[in-house]
Length: 485
Image (cartoon, rainbow, N blue to C red):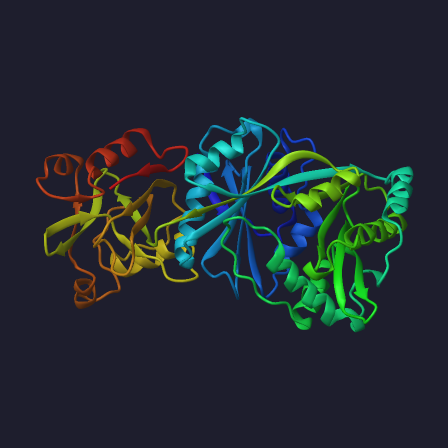
């Protein structure tokens, strides 16, 4: 049976196992996949910054990690979005592991009140399993870039030819540095980052651009410098005004790969070969600081024809498409519910009273901000029926219902159902009868399977008797069953 849970990045052995599965799924079948390094990702997860939350999530079977997900969301901007990357090694695919990880992501996004999910996929050719999986979930491709590489050390003959073709850079001067930005250039560098964020093609991706300040720049560089050496060259006019910059990241713990990141020339300075001179100067820096890295990677939007021509002159070769995808979710109220079964296979249900009549459903309720699903389940069961001190239960079903009048202020409900076997007990929670009635709960009782099958009334989910019969006969499914209404 597959279970989904967060990874504690401070548990180094578990983190290593999770990272190995995550990386194996990410690189499979790709010629030059670039995956964030073990040390860099571990440091980021163990030392969260003030701007972004990152969670490592694993799919487990018998305490073995079979697949991984990186779930991220920003804390001060882009508050409607989450970013998700799901990777399952080929040997464990087609078992519902990716779907189970996705169901976890949908629930967590609902808890956060976020309705836009974004992801990125490297696609070396068609058909491609990751692209097909995203399409089945409903993602749409909003932006496409080329992922390009050039071998290192860089071809000196090509560099010399590029220098000769570029000629003199009249009217501008270049400044290069390795590591943190010198204080005298911080404001100009921050302004150029803002211009880059505003200028870079993003297709139809939903992005809130937040201006860079010197304080934001310093904080960002301090975190990056822990795992990457930044190589920067900036162009200034003769009057000292910033005209553009280029940036390479040299990982401190990756012996294979370096990353050509931003290259920007402000619009009023284009057409003067500034971009070519920036890249040439920064490649000289790379030659000085490079150790064993064998590849330099870059990414360029298909719509950015001038930069694609520059990349071609510099010898970059496309190895795959880099696709950015987005999916908009309905705003669902997340809840955790329990199928509580006693030794005689009786199930405990609660009766809701609504304007259109009574409805019998499993105990549980809505999650509070910051709770995990299991934490919310435990709280709800103590409050509602008085059940506590049970082991983490297996999940049976995952239900997403988009319909009016299911939850005030929401587009529908999202329920995760768990199986709990327990001794028979008389339900008595911590909520008072008045508090229970305020939530439309008026009664609770144990049901035999025969009583479920013959009851002439409504259940939630609608086919609850058949679902319970299947769960009792066959046990929990290997991955949660997706339910309709």
